[in-house]
Image 1 (cartoon, rainbow, N blue to C red):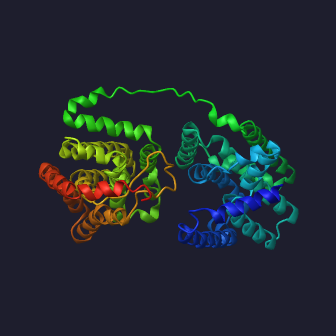
Image 2 (cartoon, rainbow, N blue to C red):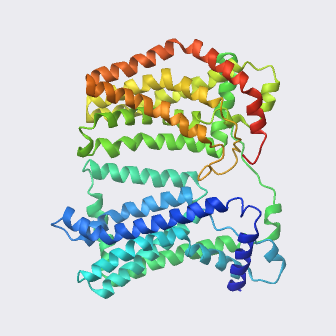
Image 3 (cartoon, rainbow, N blue to C red):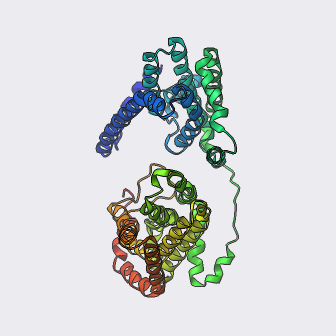
Length: 489
């Protein structure tokens, strides 16, 4: 029966109406997959020597075991965003005499051999082979690899259980941040605590039963959940949703602009893709820890300018580059009404300005790494407020691709065009170029002051710039309306 299921899936893949349309993308993704596999094999093969030279006083296996706790959490977080749940058109199969247990086992079994699970093997198997060449016991290494694959399967099936839960995402992300913070500030030796646990999988082969048992348990829970949902009338049951309302009456104090602000806030909170932009922006507050904590970047001051522009303007870039495509579903209706376009754009500018201020406040703790970091972030925030907001709104007039807000935000390139890539040149590249030139020609203080002055000048010319941008939107009005009506864009 499994052979027949595979044959049906194979035919469905090649007979799909979108197969030829996405053939070029599939070919590109195939070569990208080959590259990823090659990179993992290369890193896994040389990891032993890298760890041996980096930590000469410790065993490479012991060092790797200390980091495996981060691997498990990051793997689970990675899969939450990118791995799709196993999908199969099961309704026709429910009309014929096929056991529900067979269908459930096939779906779960197929997910067990997914590319995400195999990627880990391409990394750990070369590392295990190198261990064998260096005299490690064969039985211990082989059973350790089996334990690693059992952990991978456990992560795979746990992801299916928690994938629809935003709370699970917050818990996983929070655990990663807390553990890294405790380890970095030496409040709790995380690697020393979890290292012996994972090293025990190699040192005591009998412990293989623990990850193996956990993977079987995760499989059984998924099987039970899936089997209970395999009914034709399951989709006919009416769903009861709890309606949550928010009091946004405070937006009325902004006058005509308040109506647009209220709509934007509701759109951001009620839709997957816009809500994801908020969470991603908040997560990138910790991006600076990658650079500020490394001594190799200590003298690369222009890199701090990149961090300042990027961290304080992350929402500006992610959300702003798709203005007004976020409203593409009803943009033609808006343009047919007596709606002041200037107020519409001004509300977008105000929303992004608030995000810049919030992100700057969240980056203030980086003063721990020096006052230079705070000064650069402050100058970058002013530049984003005065210069990058008008720039991002101006480029928005060239957006003609529709965005469906109900679709999944991850791996979704809808609405993306060459405009989005061109935006990054003036928004991110220009301030970094200005800062770098002034830093090397004069001083860091001169570079920060220049960015700040440019931001203040842009803020002083706000009304003039918004008038010009409004004229640009009026010129592009009909082109945008026509583009947003094309649902396959």
